[in-house]
Image 1 (cartoon, rainbow, N blue to C red):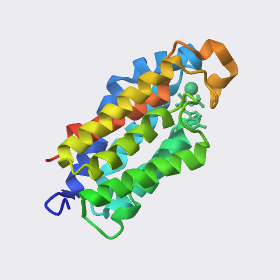
Image 2: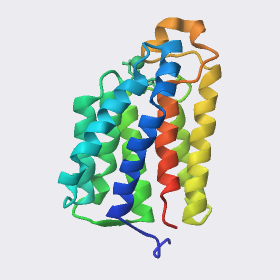
Image 3: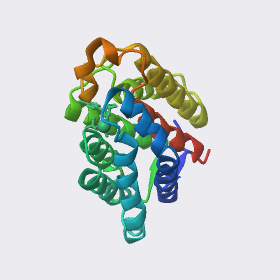
Length: 214
Ligand code: ADP
Ligand code: MG
């Protein structure tokens, strides 16, 4: 299954470059979302992290996929302040692991990468679906990926289902009362607002679709 679908290192470089650009573009929007239920720094935090990633990326050109994402994750971990730094740091560090010693991965391995990344966020943040965090975008997206693979959908359609589920999941945070993170302190008052982390996570997954070569 999916034996013809091989994804090279250049895809991952392009994805990271585009994420960095998108974060820059959406920086103020993400910060506004965080102003409503947090401390108004999410866009700012993410922008600092991805600017540093962009700056250092040329040094990582010769690394394998695991090494590349390890560097991305370590940089985010070191530079992104707030709760989202360690979460996205873990996401990208784990994401690369199935790419150990490889310059390309199969579509099946790409699924494994997302799986490890999402599980890493869940383990680190101890949040579950329904608690108004980035997990509300990431977990449904991963489940949709798995289901679409079980249905033998084409890789592109799998990626579309993945991103659709993330968007729906992020939107579902509007009605939620935060149970994790800074927004938790607002209790009922956190209702009626989109979660900033679920929004940035969806933007990130959208780039994986946008750049997808199939
Ligand atoms: P901080 O809240 O420390 O200021 P950011 O503003 O950068 O950090 O990020 C806030 C986002 O982090 C939230 O919108 C939420 O999606 C995510 N988040 C916070 N805590 C957790 C957690 N325990 N698990 C998963 N995501 C979390
Ligand atoms: Mg914040």
